[in-house]
Length: 296
Image (tube, rainbow, N blue to C red; front, side):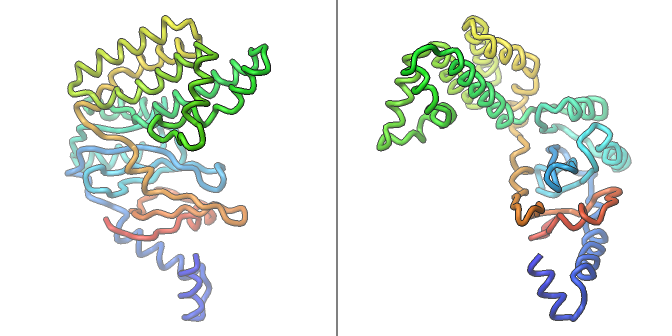
């Protein structure tokens, strides 16, 4: 916003005029990126205006171009994109998404021949959420003061990577003390560590074997949270193992976005944006997006 204000003051005009000029330029130059040669895409959502508005973004993973910005986060948000994709005659080979049912439905219906891959970081985060939920449950069930105190201080230790534990602050010792006091927590923690190895195997078959072993351990743990998560992983099995055919994720798309809240309003800074939104109706949404570098 400061650059827009500087230009507006220099020219003696309102900031909204400069924004309008910028918007028209971006729309003219970048609103219709070429789709014919696109082969691998990522789809994800972003929240703007403090979550009161959602947008669906599509990124060309090979070229780094934002191909589409749609209103909302339902499957219908992508309808205009599918129309353009079909018209262009593009042959999409792989799509990276999170586990959103809406995006799964949209992709399977419109790109039935494309490989659907689930983002590894979303899966790990999902399990971390379950691990935190288990810790809270065990804390509520703990009867001894010692056990409660140990569990209370381990939230972030459980979520940290083992390599990032700070021994100078006694983090490894505190974590081991908590795990020694609670078998279900220890089981969940070591499953968390082994889950990340799903994407580090030499072959797809080795990854499938590890996934089977992981689920068997979770199912035999007697911990309901882990048993339910094992069923979730089995449901997403093909999308997880798709990594070994197309090692893609939504990470590059999320890396384009940096959120900064100032004085109650969200500013979304994009290092790369193709202004290809369809039907943005509100002035507030249009001006909540600030292009920083345009490189399409």
